[in-house]
Image (tube, rainbow, N blue to C red; front, side, top):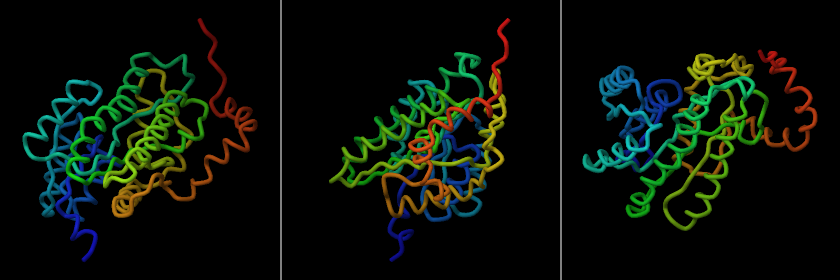
Length: 270
């Protein structure tokens, strides 16, 4: 019996699912028999994606939600409970970045980044984890970044948010040992999504140099499916990035010197 056949009743909740990694993962997992629950703010994109999945005989539902708001997160999980759609697998994918000198970031952008990249992840996990433990199966997958272990210039708050995911996931993974619930973090390199456009769109945001090295989101979707089939604490996507933590360990001084050159000079203050 294949993995797909034994797990085709599992429900996967994917945040940030209207485009990019979330959308591609939803499409791919639906082809493998999972029921996918898509959550994001853009209702039209969610509806179109659900229609596409259903047209291919997949099972999908969407929920319009601004996950930066605490009560919205509570209401979302309450609705899933009422509709018997509590997730077996939670993929905390929603998040965004910003590139530039930290002091030039508007605090509204910083506050939103913390709310989505950190608070929503912790809160949603807290809301669904008891049910997973009670049912005897569950998997929390946090979409992290190599930036969590390799903090670089221009992404101070983003790097910090991904470092939180690393620590949060490792602690959860250790707490959950011995149960049938686990936690994983996927440390991603640059991926071809709207992430870079979004980073530019925020006030004072700039171009992220890593965009030139981005890989397709479909690669991430396939790797996340393998992670569900064979859980582990950490995966790197692409796998070659497993060396990235060593760069900070052995070349931190060089990065300290090169970083400012890549980011550019600070603009003079008026």
